[in-house]
Length: 112
Length: 113
Image (cartoon, rainbow over all chains, first blue to last red; front, side, top):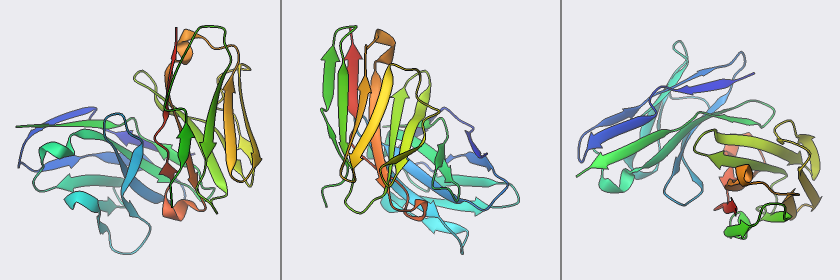
């Protein structure tokens, strides 16, 4: 079975500062990795995904994530955050059976 | 493409009443998932279907919960009788392969008083 750990439940950061949201996973098989964003009172939206190939993937809104197989990590980064980035961020892993396993989420709060 | 459509967006009901939540997946997506989100437990997978057939319902909390998918374009999640602890946001999601990720609906916020 797969599992996903998001190491920080809340991350406050000042506007225009860089941010990293951490995600580790455990899996005995090859998996796909995803980051989703949930704005208040909305559903989850796909931010980016890693399927194969280059370990650095770029997503929407200036976010990027790096897949590290040896550390089983998939951390999300943004060099300069905006107020509008305030949201809940979920890391997820999917197995070949098309089932997703979500982390518990990281609440990012951007402070003016 | 209208995305995954859930109805209603909000539902307030009294304890003991039957509640039915509805979901229309994206056309062509043959996997459909029902999730529940609460502050205490986060996102929980309740059940998922493949080609209208329930594959894994181990997340359904108890017999008061039931889900059906009578055809490829419609699914329901029913709670009977409802209890205050069922209050949560219920999401439906669909995909045709995990390679593409899930597409989520906007959710139904259920309040049982």
